[in-house]
Image (tube, rainbow, N blue to C red; front, side):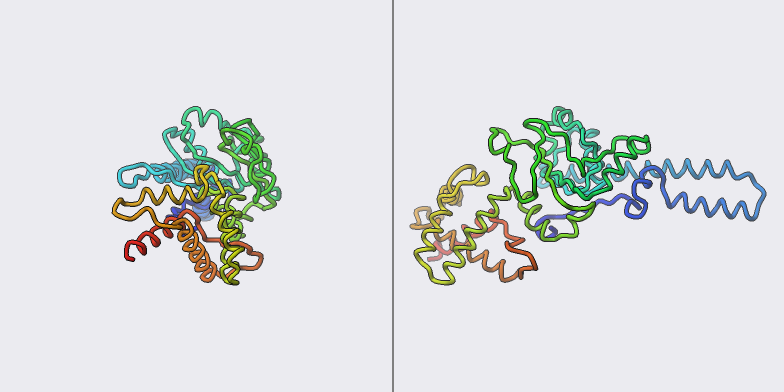
Length: 356
């Protein structure tokens, strides 16, 4: 994703090696303290219990300091400004990161995040999304919770919560968040869109998406992040993205084989197609509106301007296809953003017409 977004990685100290224990104790402090206790026990007759208590207390306090430090990093990223304006950063949170993100949302209700992806979530399945969004309706643009049916870590987090070892943790990464009308829906597979949202005037902002991953499976599958996560972060539905790409690929095939009639039919399908990302307009109307917003010194009444833009988009798609060889199992193009390509195509067409 680094080629499409400015990535700011935030990691919790020692979590990779010590897991949830790093939330309770600072393990390096415990290890160093244990070495010191062993040395004192070996070379002196001093009582050890005060030193053991001191080491445990220091470890507990330092773990809390690290916890707050990580939380402040998330808040700092969520408070970034560009040209004096707050931006809404997209977030991909894994495992303990999901806990940090939602803790930040509850403790700092002025935070505004963009699209949020949870993988291996350790939040409780009854997390109070309704309360969070009531306190700050702009807290998140939307949330995608990838529910890994082979993920055991959220179930362990739930056990830790029930025995009072880690409060506020749960297994939403295995069971999903509780469904609520107009708030939380569940989608049966990663490549599907939400059927309930298609029938509702206002789509639910939070979706559980059933997957067959283990705890870190999504991160080990680059095709998944390319085909599923990137379109989501760009603002495309799975079917919309696939349909647009498939039409452009058909145009590319017809052009290569000089099937002019088939090309014209497919182009007409594309020009008349409507998507949420075009604002409900046909693709032709969407292109024409973008052209009308172009600087006034450029001509606007260009014959077949939409067709010229489509040809340029198809050419861009061919370039992306050639520069990104397909991997095993790949059927689509992983790094093609339709909106960026359309804007670039309009810029190329308008400048070429102005020069002519």
